[in-house]
Image: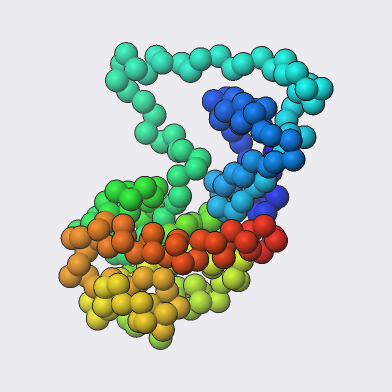
Length: 229
């Protein structure tokens, strides 16, 4: 069975429910066809065919013992573990000082489906990026004075393209223009947002992210197929 992503080479773990659904999808796969999955860590495409199933299923008849039903003890108590993370939820990093604006940014990102991590120092942000493949990074440009002097922005601009192209990089600032693509391009970012529009950031993201995915999605898919993460 699949144990690591062929793109990022990181170990993969599946819940019993995910395993069951994967086995079922592979069993129903027509001959010569492949099942395309998204890696929850790097978002690269993983192509599977029937030979990826468990050894006992290779003879054509599956004798896999189905997993037990989920434990629903938490349902009666109304309590569940809020620290449990959903593996396929994209993660976002917010580098911003602690204030109301940062809370607005976090709420907007969560509203469009991101799992959000907040940091207020450049060193902590860079350290987290060493171990986590964030799908989105938000940077308050005034945190370090100016972009020209910013250590973090310089770090983002120097990232290898096999990482950078999979990060949706958002710049927040008082002198930036919201949804101004030319300004974002000039700063090597994907989106610029003026702080005056933070109260409607979720609406801005719902417009900007689909536009980005429509434009670059097919290109990124093709690069993933050829191993160019």
